[in-house]
Length: 73
Image (cartoon, rainbow, N blue to C red; front, side, top):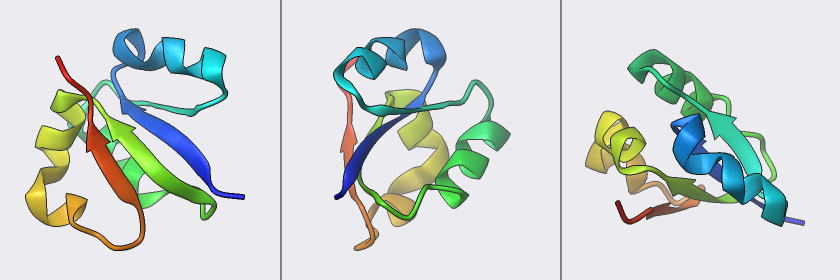
């Protein structure tokens, strides 16, 4: 089964855990990149905060491996 994950600042993403979404907290650019590189193999959808999306950039987000969605501010 494919899981959904949320990547970004813990203050913006913590509530998603209540819905069973996998939390990938990241407060620095290095943490965002590490969490992205280490995505669990069964994650198929990644919700990103605007800050996390900005760190990863367009090229990284256009992958066929996972569907990415940038959360509204």
